[in-house]
Image (cartoon, rainbow, N blue to C red; front, side):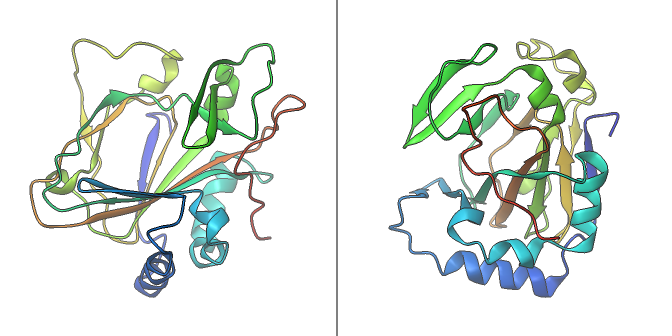
Length: 227
């Protein structure tokens, strides 16, 4: 992943896509982890709330990708389900994913930018943790520029945490077919336009790492993967 991202088709077959969506739909919208509005529907820590979702998506293809790009001892550190509604005005400008979720606030050298949102404690870790993180976005719908596919700046993950460039060049649109996945490093500059069609864009966003945080901190959503 020299460019900081990779598109992989057929990570899930159609049956697994359907089963995953049925499981997700079974969660009541009143659950505290559900974020719902006219332009956004999301579920935080979806693999913790619905642990039966993990064996559905944990295919041999996904396991091989995680092992290759994150390590054989990798574990889940974050899981979010996103549903971008049709004709949504939800626009996300270019940014890097630099915050991780931890179990509590504890002052440790090298960690900064503490936040607390909806009961989730976030912090910016040393770059080594972000460089080791692997994000995999599993798509449950065909996704292109009309329904909010990510746009990225290749190789922008190699320059550490930085400001968004004022001039964007060499932008790549990351179209992904249903059942496919987009792999990326969190320091890769990425953005998403609003949907302009009635096509849905449902995505399971998973983050992996194989580094433990400095004591006494713990990853808030640490989930061990099946053997």
